[in-house]
Image (cartoon, rainbow, N blue to C red; front, top):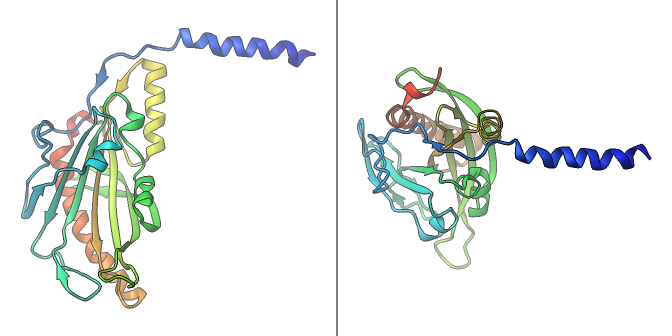
Length: 251
């Protein structure tokens, strides 16, 4: 009998909270540098040390999965000492590091997703995602997420098996005054800011990915992964110092 009377009371209390929740106000912009990124023309930084870079337009399929006010910026970076990628027949072709920057609109739930979910949908297998502490070239310490996976390339000839290659990726999220490696941490930050301060913030997602050939044995694969890891971390450190406004993010 007590439970019968308690239920309407709790329901009324929860519904009443709607009227005291802060209303949506202005959105605080992400702490990415507009000097380094051409947001209007969707061009990432093209001059980073000795890296050779070019902007890449996102595909229609990629754009269609995001809310219409989302900015999606892509680029590819190569260097003289990046080893070529070998196809199934042993034919070498140019390798590079892929950059993806997604800048959310007002509907953040349809703007930024966990990359693990997207990569699985693209066919990536054996994913291992772990947090890692990283230091940029300017000496800023930050948390990033390191993600490794296997991607089966379509066979060159009909009837052949897919040709697997390795992928290594690093990603993080940049808010107005926050930088985090974790999707759930970002969600909690948003909830806290909305409930306590009535504040909304724009988020950006930054990810670098690099393919590499698997070896004939685990030791050879590990060596090739380490080579790829070294190059991607080099670019990650240089790029992050250019695109993040560190003065806006508390240490």
